[in-house]
Structure formats: structure tokens, C-alpha cells
Length: 67
Image 1: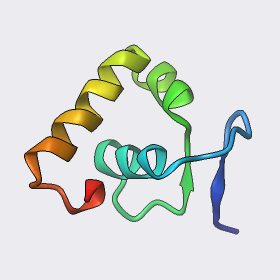
Image 2: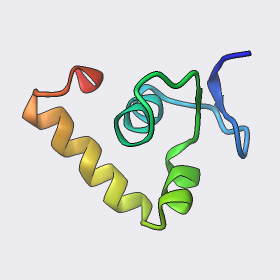
Image 3: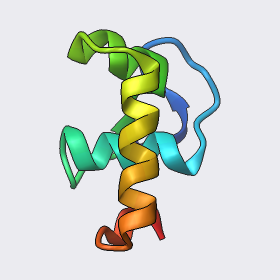
Image 4: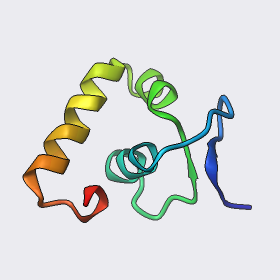
């Protein structure tokens, strides 16, 4: 069953940015999501790198997930 409110790994409460970046980087049709920290761990990068991507996509105005 879809859980749009909590990270499926650690159970943390999700924000819109958590769901949007997961869809952008992993799978557009996802109905379960990782929080930014768990996503960073899975992708072997830092939280700051993911936050920079979120900022980039939001400022570019090109991605509808970040509007």
C-alpha cells in the first residue's frame, strides 16, 4: 500500500522535496519514498549534494516536480 507520508526505510516524516527528488532520481511512478538522508545513503552521496540538486531543479523552473 502506498505511503506518501513516511520514509519506507527509517519511517521519517516526508516533505514535498523528499518525494519530488526521489521521483526525479529514482522512479517517476513511485508510490513509496526514501527521505533525503536515506536516499543519499542509497546513492552513495551526501545530503548536501541532493539538496543542491533540489535547489537547482527548483530555480531552473524546468521540472514540474519542484514547482
